[in-house]
Length: 156
Image (cartoon, rainbow, N blue to C red; front, side, top):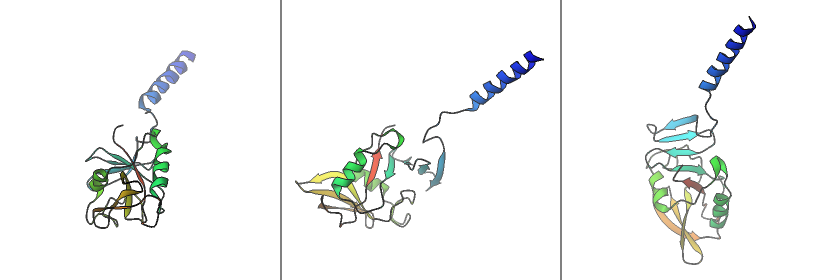
């Protein structure tokens, strides 16, 4: 009888281990939108299946470009390695009429301006305006433009 229970216990462990999957911030999606183009993960990461880019929205507050860069550099979600987006990458998120900001609502923000990593001269940087889909430059030390920060990851 003891052998029987040992065999059953071992079989049970094999079944449990066989069905177990590694824990990862990307294993379970929360929500899909726009015909599954964007997938939001429990970690807050939003994957764009069209471009392959992964996004993580920063704090929903006005930030300077310097604060945005510092926040991205210190971001450790999903293993870190995040960077500031290019204007082209930000433009890829722009979809007129999508959500309240012309982008997927999975990127939760109340702002329309997002900082890029591209600088202009010694004191300015480029922002992308999701209200109209255009780029503008502004002073890196100012948060008056309402600039938000999104971190991007292009290879996982």
